[in-house]
Length: 262
Image (cartoon, rainbow, N blue to C red; front, side, top):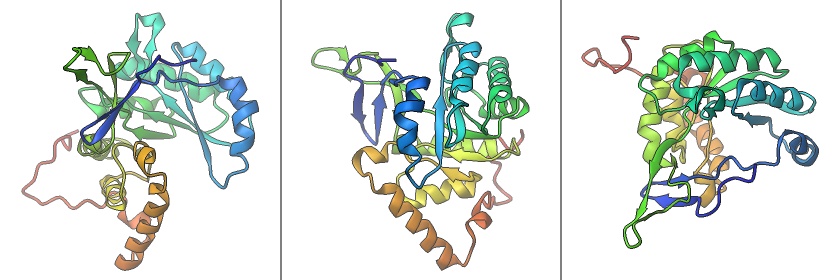
C-alpha cells in the first residue's frame, strides 16, 4: 500500500495526528526485504497485520507464517470491513470475534489483538477477542481526531481526520487498560502516550504486562532505553520484582471505579 498523500502528520498540543494510511511493502516483500535484517537484532519481532476482509487477514497471516524470526502477530482490527459496507472490525463485537477466530486458526505464532478505543465499552471487545482465541491484547490504538488551518479553512491532514496519539491520550488509554485487565485473563500490552518510566509504571500498576512506546520515538529515539533503566532502578529502590507491580493498584474503599461493575 502506498499510503495517503501528504500532509499526513500534524503535531498537536501534547500529541500527534497521523493519517499515514498504513503504508507498507506487503507481506511477501516484508519476508524478503525486512525480516532478514530484523533477525539480526537482539529483539523480538511482533508483526502488525491488517486487511479489509477476514479472508485477507487469513491470507496475510498464511504468507507471514513462512517467515522465520517472528515472535507474534499483532492484529490491527481498526480497519473497515469492505464486505460489510465499511463497518470497522473493532467497533462490532461479532466482527471482532469473526476475524480473531479465523486469524488464530491460521496463525503459526501467538496472536495479539490491538483494540480500538473508539468504542463505548472496551471490556465488551476485550472479552470478544479473548473468547475468539486471542493470546494477548494491545490497548489502545489511536483516537480519531482532526485539526483545521484557520487561515485557509482547510484540514491539516489530506485525509481530513487522523489518529491521535501521544501524551494527550494517556489518561484515557490508562483507564481502558485498567478496565480490560479486570475483564479478561489474557495478558495486556499498554499503549498510549507512554514517554517516561512513570508512564510505564502507571500502566503496569493498572494491569498491563508490557508497554509500547510510539509517538515519543519521533522526538526522542532514546526513550525506550532510558525507560528500561528507569524500571530497573525503580524495582531496586522498592525491592520488588516487576511482576509484583502488575495489577497492584490499591483502590480506597470509598471509591467506585468506573467499569468495576463489569
